[in-house]
Amino acid sequence: MMTSAETGQPPVAIAVRDLTVAYNDQPVLWDIDLDVPAGVLMAIVGPNGAGKTTLIKAVLNLVRPAAGSVEILGQSYRQSRDKVGYVPQRGSVDWDFPTSVLDVVQMGRYGALGWIRRPGPRDRELALQALEKVSMRDFADRQISQLSGGQQQRVFLARALVQDAQVYLMDEPFQGVDATTERAIITLLKDLRTAGKTVVCVHHDLQTVPDYFDWVALLNVRKIASGPVSEVYNDTNLRLAYGGRVAFLSRDSAAPATAQSVPEED
Amino acid sequence: MLSLTAGQMEVQIVAIVVAVACALVGVFLVLRQMAMMSDAITHSILPGIVVAFFLVQDLSSPFLIIAAAATGVLTVSLVELLNRTRLVREDAAIGIVFPALFSIGVILIARFAGGIHLDLDVVLLGEIAFVPFNRTTLFGVDLGPTALVMMTIILIINLLFITLFYKELKLATFDAGLAAALGFSPALIHYGLMSLVSVTAVGAFDAVGAILVVALIVGPPVTSYLLTDRLWVMLALSAGIGVLIAVSGYWMARGLDASIAGSMATMTGVIFMVAYLLAPGRGLIALAFRRRRQRWEFAGTMLAIHLLNHEGLPSAEQENRVDHLQEHLNWDSDFAERAVRHAERHQTVVRQNRHLYLTEKGRQRAREAIVR
Image 1 (spheres, chains in turn purple, orange):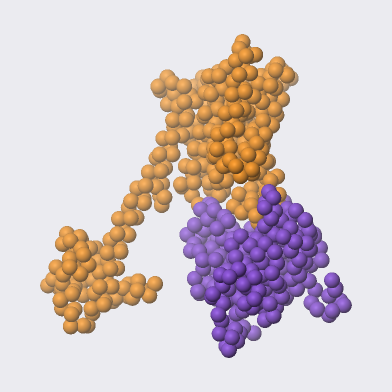
Image 2: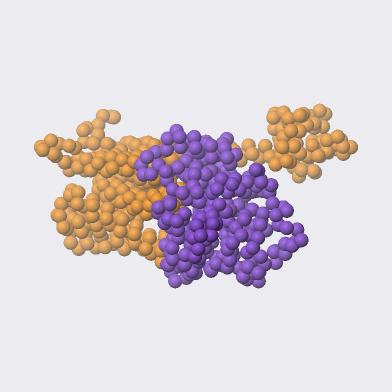
């Protein structure tokens, strides 16, 4: 393993070493080695049950690995916790919980506040700014059960934004959102990358991977491949990850995938 | 008639303190979808109380509370242990664990404690009316009924815990994953809360019995959940409803000369039903009204779209007649007449000799509906 100093490459944001996670004796992730360079926008793709969510949870120390280790920005998760933002699956929480949009976004500040201390005017202001970035400021006082799926996802993103992290881990941020929200989210993610953040998303839509992401990991219990999308995102690897079930990948090779990409803001 | 003796006043105050203490912890149990865990805890603490009683031979010893609380936490752990094996679901696990522990308590009492105050009626229903007879004195000063002193301390602990860890409780309840990722151990918060529920249950148990404890832990939160969508309001409302249950239950018992605990449990149900029917926004009546209104609003929109589609076309002459709505929108003549009247009232449509014309407002509404 070369260090970044030797190669002159950007430092590694997430380094996963020999990670194995098992539920009872059923392995969900087998011996994963994965380097996520700092400053990339990375997709984790793979079929259902491939362990994508588990990988994110293992990085966040939410599941206990049977073997292996994870380092974030060269430190253990415990040490680098305040540099990591997390967007769980939208369906993982109860949206009938009695609280407002602003309150949910402020939860992103709880890590910085620590135990017992309550959010103050500054936290409120940061939360409102984050809501502004996802075009949800007008919804600040709404009860969260009144939101559509796309709005819920924006609120979760705003909550991650107020964490002001270096590394973001997102579990299916595009799940069940409409096209407008999808565009808004990808613009936001690209802005984060421009700002030097590292963003890792569990992603399901194989078609949009080349447009949205510059780095990809293909997963199916084992790691199939990882690296720049232009190098590793090909039929061979997809077939390895998904078995023979990938008919959809007959992308027109004459038209480079980047031709359809969302124009960057800058 | 409404005058109370000092003893009756004390009974009433104990009922209030018990109800508020239960209602506060209940909010988090209900939001965590663990309402039935209160049933498990209130029953399974019995063997804890019995064993502790054998050890200290004193029913009012604080050691009993600690032992019972430990049994409560043990219950929660056992349920979770069973649940984690993935062989038994949580509700079934609760159904296995608490009757097992409760029945051990029942056998212990029947076999070894027949002669003492620990009898099963009291366990299930409590006897709050006898509360004033068992008093606590400190340095010769009468502090009041033991149950009141105990429950006041427990209420203060609950208030402190919820006030201090409000933010942590909220986060761990809403999104345990993020709580863990941010370094707030959800397990610690969970067991903290469960200990609190156990302690509250033991304290309340002696005064009001196991069944009313469940009613007081679950009833006020589910009622207030219908009335608000803010957590702190839900906590305050739950406490308020607890007070209401205590007072109204007490007076109902007095009026009917019935069991106070039973009357309080009944009032819990009555108050829930009233909220269920009348709650603004979520109650049955509000829902029925909203559905009715939406029905007419939808009919009005359909009418506006129909008129807009034919506006300015030769077919308009035919299509915009009231009696044609039956054919074209599948409305019977009565419904069509009422829908048109509703639309006229809302100024989206005007009627001139049986012909209908869209107003500017109606046109706009139809266009908006189509675009969406």
